[in-house]
Length: 306
Image (cartoon, rainbow, N blue to C red; front, side, top):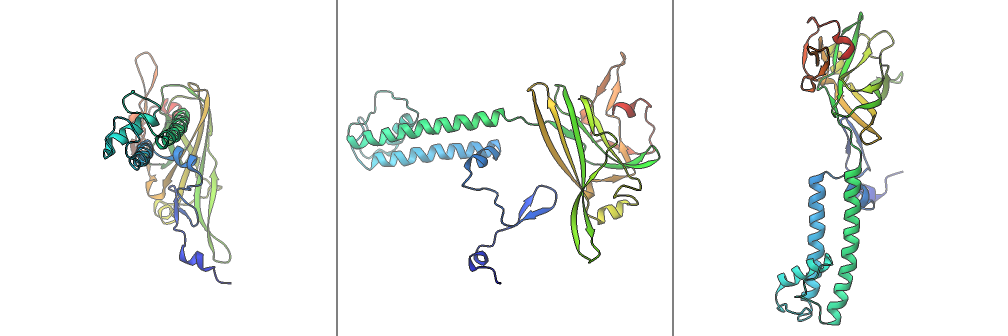
């Protein structure tokens, strides 16, 4: 049965789903039936531009309505659009200076409608600003490159991350997934999201840099992989992380994705921690992505805190 003609005329464009290399057909980036989702999801610069655009549009519309009836506003020249525009700004904000005022029934009706619209606009903007400011945001720092290096007689996939805030985070949980292309017995290929077991996936207290480690043994989907086969397989690594931020008393979530070309074989992370003269451990987040050859010597204590 052929597709209906409307579908053929307006075939949806593929929409990229983050860095996983997945696309959707039929999904929309902006659904005008859900303006709240759009307003909350916009970046701050885009939100500011849209807010100013909506405010400017409302004032232009009402200024035009005032100009359509010359003489409806006291102390305003009948052909002065800018006087009507500034009167609209004052009315929309429910602020009156006593100089310009409606004098006809038409102007009173338009100004009354504008006052109601202005109060609704202010309430909506206030609500959106509160939601955007109060929404908890994660501040995790990730190494730019995962590494595959030797650890406890096994090749091990490692990803280092850190708490980017000064406040203590507790009950941190991390999961590592791999998006792998597999082939069936019928010679069909499909992508499968596989959870990779971690040597440690939970931290009661998350303060210092944390290295996620997946042992590449016989049970690992990467067993026998080399740098070349890893890149050819177009593997993508996905890290999900959640932790409770003690400062705002809520749980924050984050996710990051690495493509196969980001993985470095035969390298390991350089120390991101050190000891001061009093024996205090100091974390340096500026070194979170620093790599070195895996044969480099490392202090014995570093493996426990890095």
